[in-house]
Length: 509
Image 1 (cartoon, rainbow, N blue to C red):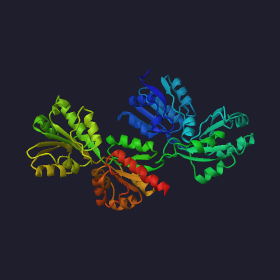
Image 2 (cartoon, rainbow, N blue to C red; image 1 turned 135 degrees about the vertical axis):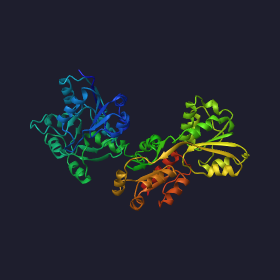
Image 3 (cartoon, rainbow, N blue to C red; image 1 turned 90 degrees about the horizontal axis):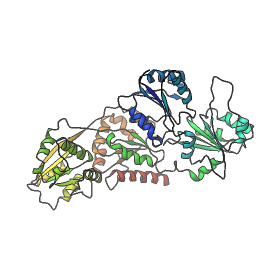
């Protein structure tokens, strides 16, 4: 027997936050990930980079690989590898997980099942529809809206289902919605029974159409709603008017491009997502070590000769402390030195090493450090600035003019990521982007280096441009952009608030 094993893992209905801890744990150990159309591809980031990732999605009848082919693939890979079969929702709730498990048993391959949050429960909840409510129903049923095409024998007892269950949840029923409604009415369900059809539930693309058994087919056709969707039938649908929390979030459905480096995106993206935005990651800078550590290592060797160390970014702190540790030293090496930081996040990074900065300017830019040092006699003092290889020189140049000795050493460098820009261009051409965010001048410059300026600039004039501060905004204007959003405080939190205020203002107007 081989060393392999297959895990049939439920990925949940789409919201990345609904992935279980066990699913994440197994993805991190996977050698092969076999995933389908309804499993959020964002989950693939948890898998090791070297893991083989195989898409076997089935979308509206267009099968990348049929079920028999998927079964054969699971058996072939499962003999020698740790395989995660990532399925949308729950593998045993209309996910064909039972069929796949049977094939693995027949082939003698060990397997485990990891339940997922089923769309039957999660999607209505995100649409503000509780499946049970004491004033409306005491029963519910989950029903497939798309039975086997190779059988004329229906396994749905419409005569009992129509009047015997309070809340009905249909999977994959958009195509057969007319037949579903007709069967329910024919077998005794009242035509005025409320119905909701929810597409891409639990994601920022969620769209909900409501009506009754008599009207929902026309409502769905008018709205142009396509699969995948969940259909809910029952009096509880009426509670949506009161309980619709997800679609009422301030940035719901807004598509926001995040150009920040991938290493720094998570917090920014998380807050935007919590407000309902659909974040599209498009990092235009990548953080890498400098070509040589020698200048920084030499500065660290002579650390005691400096009076001030000025950190201008979280990355500067990170790489500085890593090289200090590589030299067998720690934060105690900074004893007796005065420390300055630009911005609260940089301060937090420093404080994470038990160090408290002596100077944090009220405005988070280089000019404000100079203002903070205005009362200091810097002549003859030695300053160390570990920072990006390419950065603005106003701070070191001004200090030198005042008689200070300043060593600017590269602690890291920002480079242009090697990725395509076709997706962003297509979104812009289709009018599918509401906001493009820039968090540094280099994100702006690198963004434009990835496109034909004559092609991209007219498209960007149709979307809101958000810049974290005046230096970034100035660079954006030099490239021909109009700035719509810029906070008075130059932080990520303030930028998020400004984006929210901007779009809420548009809604009110």
